[in-house]
Amino acid sequence: MKIKLSLILLTILLIPIALSPWIAQDSSVIDLNNRLLPPSAGHLLGSDELGRDVLARLLAGGRISLAVASATAILAALLGTTVGLIAGWRGGWWDAGLMRLTDGIISLPLLPLLIVLAAVDPIRLGVPAPLVASEGFAIARLIVIIAVVGWTTVARLVRAQTLTVKARDHVRAAVALGVSPTKIVLRHILPHVSSPILVATTMSMGGIILTESALSFLGLGVRPPVASWGNMLSGAMDLVWSAPLLALWPGIAIFMTVLAVSLLGDGLNER
Amino acid sequence: MSRRILIRVWQTFAVMLVMSVVVFALMGAMPGDPIDMMISGNPHLTPADVIRLKTVYGVGKPWPVRWADWAVQFAQGNLGYSRLFARQVSQIILPALEHTALLAVTAMSLALAVGIPLGIVAGAKPGSRRDRVITFVSYLSLSVPTFWLGLMLIALFSVRLGWLPASGASSLLSPQEGGVWDVGRHLLLPAATLAVGGAGQYIRHMRAAMIAESTAPYLRTARAKGCSPLRVTLNHHLRNALLPIVTIAALEAGALLSGALITETVFAWPGLGRLSYDAVMGNDYNLALTALLLATFLTLAASIIADLAYGLLDPRTRAQ
Image (cartoon, rainbow over all chains, first blue to last red; front, side, top):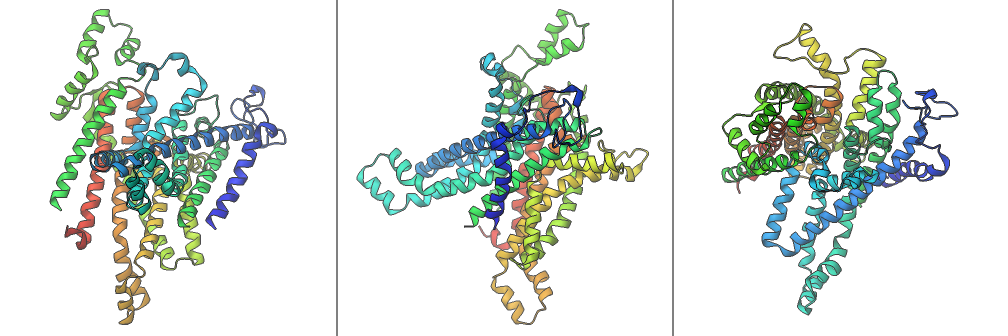
């Protein structure tokens, strides 16, 4: 039931977003004579403060927001899986150290920390200036900082699962045969922990989308003119007194996406 | 038990120490040197003044040295001077904490008042139509982006209807002309925004706890001795199912007190979250460090209190 509902929502969202390069108008065309238009046949959802088509920006923003969220979730899952496998397999000091680190990160107030991370000037950390100025850099950095604080759930799950799999006969047989530890972990343990990783990653997507949009909303994530759902809302907030409806659509898009992935995650988890 | 608490307190200080080092190092890598900002803000500064200021702020020294200087002062209770507000940090933090506390208490009361009863109703008959509707509502409330919800409430109640103010706050301790009424008017929208997510959490956990306890033998005993269904639910079932909620509520309180950063920013609520945002963005070292450490402390303290409360309420966990 949950999975079915989530797949319906995802279809409604993903098909227009995937087809947008062919069906929608150009999202970057500025038309200052036609600013803040109400919905009409020419602009199905109206136009924004620079006369850009809101629907086109919504779809273009969706591509960015969903790409960022997926990349972040995958990176976080990779980090978490690595930490969990090492902690579970090595045990002892490795386990204690890595798990204390995990507990520490979970206990921190994450949003203020993310803001500090997002406000750091990469040039001062030695990143070359032309790279920093490029369009993709802000997005890549957003992915990295959210993943750096977001891997903890996966790490805990993978560690717990690794501990149980480690005691199974096939792993003990592999150890007795003298298979190298790397090969045991990757060949004989990883396949058995993959389904919890998948579930945990799906469940974490909702939180990641919300965090990404919040950071972009605060001006610390995806930067204009590149559209994302979060930064469309921050533009809309400045205009809430003159055009209160501008904020409606990006919010509904985030809302529906988060709802769909949470339903999917829980649905998979219950199976 | 007391040993465990002692370890947790020790860990709290360790985490705060690490956090202060990390934040200090990261803030050193932020755009805009504090001294440069002062120079651009005040054209009357002479080069001699600049050198003097740089010595006062220790700009020439490497950051570990500056951190050590700061830590010694901090440990002595001297939080330093906020560049952004041109006042002592302690004078800025306390009113912000008061505003955040007011917002947190209101939001949490609202969330509990809505979430707990709905969770009980849903968990009492899992799979029923009522349960499905309530569960779906909890999904909705957990999926809605808070800043967008805040914007929509502003658009509806402030812009369209003009009933409530969109931003700002007045203080309970020193009320302005509107008195308590005015405080409430400013409080309602941000508190409601925050309460939505909280209520969703309580519904889910309350429901899960009700279902988890529903097969307990003491319930069968109570029914067998002839307790009325209502009495079984309220006096036996609910009392045990509320245990995990105490933990969730304590953690939630920690999160709210450490600053509902986004909601506070949307509603221009002068609390701890907004203060830490402004301080980080304005490169105000002393203020940002104090605000972030206070937020960390409150989050960690809440989780210790959650542990303690659980031990008090459930004697079984005290044995270890």
